[in-house]
Length: 326
Image (cartoon, rainbow, N blue to C red):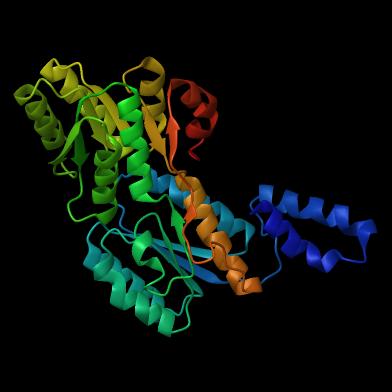
């Protein structure tokens, strides 16, 4: 993306090489200072996600989006709700306000199909992010940015098999989320042992802990617990300890707590889908489309993961995790 952006912005410098380097340096300094690095109009882009309150994953997505927006002279507007109907209403509000672009996650795609169709019909470019890669093109989005959840799940199943695990539980904390179902299905497909799903109430951490603990106590043969979000990993560790289980706890996504637990050995591995990149690329690609009619992906999702992160990789990424960009 850096090369593409440099090419787009550098086009105006052809024939004036004596000043090109200085101008490029000025743009870089402006971006670092939080000032726009482009001279395009101040467009407004809205991002609407299915994030629940306090979900640190989406804080990282927002950080990437905001930093791209600052560079691209974009007025960035963010709204979120874990209820699909409210999410759809936020998208409708963005349409009514005649924004210049929309980024939306499709955890529950059917609930957003009609309103995304309205945005496309109104001439507002849409990019989907994180969830809903299978429905993105069908709904009229320019592209989808995120990891393929089925592929990510398959990576987990393969890693569990490599680690010699025999019986795993996949903990789903948001019922109806198609991405979560795909993760567990992918893991089950490639896992050499047996895996079952455990549905928990993700908005109630004591309840999550109790459900995992009860499962481990009822079935001591479970030797792996897979959580689908970083905030649930410490809860699974507590449940494992309380149950007296020796099961390995693994998780999707990274945050500072996950990095510490990877380094200490409390967690086996994590799956990074690079949320910062999802937010940054979504805004940057909308800008490129508005400015130059550029589209990436060739009709396929732009993948940001998965990457298996173990203790060694966590140590290498620690400085980025601390600053909130991984």
